[in-house]
Each structure stands twice: as structure tokens, then as C-alpha cells.
Length: 102
Image 1 (cartoon, rainbow, N blue to C red):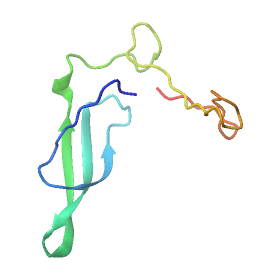
Image 2: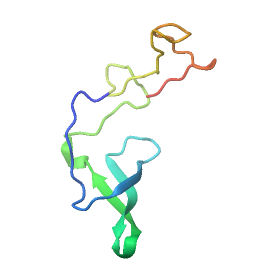
Image 3: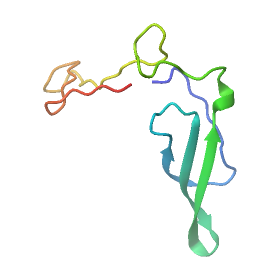
Image 4: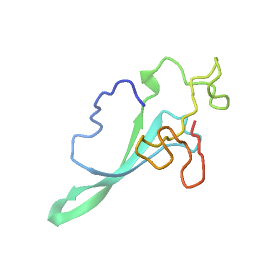
């Protein structure tokens, strides 16, 4: 739920991105992007690019273990149904389960 977005050109050559990987705790500002790009002879070659956003912020986010607290940069988010869903507008129950993300 970014409030604003900016484009970032991370390679000069066209590539198809297969996945973006971050560390399991999801607090890292280093991402690994892997995919493929065209190679001579109609083949493709694998590509791995590391993007480091560490220099873009003055400090690392804090409070991942205490979301929604006054000292935390994190908040809890839960998917909600739309008004046309059987559970009604704002229902957080999906297939009998409620899930929250930090």
C-alpha cells in the first residue's frame, strides 16, 4: 500500500522477471531479482540482479515484532471482501479463516 511509486531501471537490457527474493523476515532492503533474457541463437540466458535500497532511507524500519504500536513502523493488514461478496462488505473471513499480515 505504497503512497507513491517511482520507476527504477535496474538493467539496461530487457529481461523477463521470474521472481523477486527477499530474506524470510522481510525487513531487508536488499532484493534479488532473477529471470531470463534473450541470448544469441534464439536461446535464453539466466540473469540474477541484486538491488540494494539501503541508501534510500535514513534508518531501518523498527518494530516488526510489535506492529500497530506507537514505536513501530509496521501495521497489521488483513484482506477484506468487497460489498458484493457473500460474507458482506468488509468481511475478513475467507473459507472459514481469518488471516493477518504484518
